[in-house]
Every structure is written in C-alpha cells, then in structure tokens.
Image (tube, rainbow over all chains, first blue to last red; front, side, top):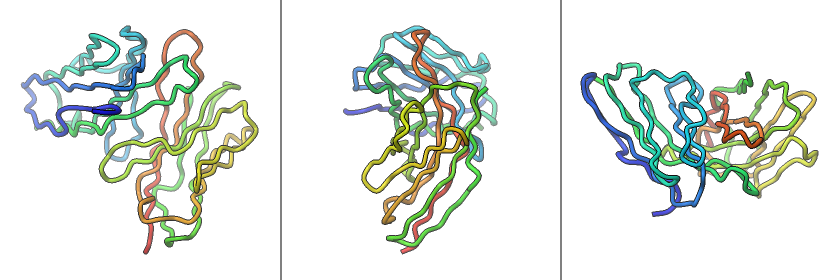
Length: 114
Length: 118
C-alpha cells in the first residue's frame, strides 16, 4: 500500500449504529487530519492530530470521536449519527516541520446515514 | 478567520485551450501557503500546485501555473493545453505556516467544476 488509505470506501448505517472509519498513512508523516466533504459546501476540517496528540477539534459534535493510536493510524468512531452527517469523509496526512508540509489525502469514505 | 472564495462553480474549456480558475482569500496573516487541489470523479484529492506567500515568483508545474497577487489576495490557476484528464473539481486552499504550536488544517473554497470539451 502506498500513500494514504481509507477503509471502508462506502458505509451505510442507521442512526442507532456504531461504526468506525479507518485511515492509514504509509508516508512516514507526523500529522493526520479528518475532513468532512458535504455536497455544495467547502471541505470542513474536523480534527487534527500532531505526533498522536489532538491539536484541534473544530467544534465537531461528540457523536464523532477520533482516535490516533500512533502516527500512522487514525480512526473516526461514529455513534448515534444524524442523516445530515451523510458525507464523504477524507483523511489526510502531512509532515509538519519538514521541508514541505503538504497534506496528502486518502480516497475517502462515502457515509450514508439512514 | 480565514476564508477562501471560488466564484466560478463551473467552467468549460475546449481541449488544448487555456483556462483560468479564480480564487480569492481573506487573511490578516503576512505569511501563509496557498494550494490548488484537484479531485477527479474517483474522489482522490491530488495536489496540483503550491505557493508560499513570501515568494514573489509564481509557482509552475508543467502545464499548471498560478498568478499570485498578494496585495489583491488573489490566487488564480492557469491550465494550458487542457487535456481530457484535467476534468475534475478544483479546490483552492489556504494554510498558515507551521509555527511550532501544532499542525494546521486547510481552509478550502467551495470548488470549481472544470469540464473539458473534446
């Protein structure tokens, strides 16, 4: 695997379900990010992890719970979601403090909440 | 807070022609980074080009170049010799430099849907 991978690619869940999104980066980066991409809205930053520590929570509802066990893996735990949470969830990684700290994105997980 | 505005929801260009996508931003910072990302229908977001605000020279990457006007807070993307594979959503994004306080996320515009006419 190369770059940033995300699983699953598609997820359909009911409002009472609990599910998790997984992101893995194979680039040796030290920062990871979750973004939400809804139709007709700009991509919204949700969470930032730097060296496994959460450095930003962009006023995200508590039904979204991130976890970063190490610098290569990032999870987004979902519970009691609402239909308006249906969106494409993108993970990204970057090397903060390096020569270039460009963010590299995964393919996303398309989430549908019924 | 920083904002990024892309005023063209959709643009269309003939294959082999040149097209320019517009982006303006608002910030009180003097140092920052600007990006253009491309998102083809497969949804993988790909970096097209990057510009550091302290550099006066416009960035170029093969057929892609930018016109960075710092005073006007404008950052347009020019695609020369358009190809069918250029069809995608293009997003302009802004980020402050790493300052030692932790990583910063990107602020995105709403995107421009670029159509290439064969």
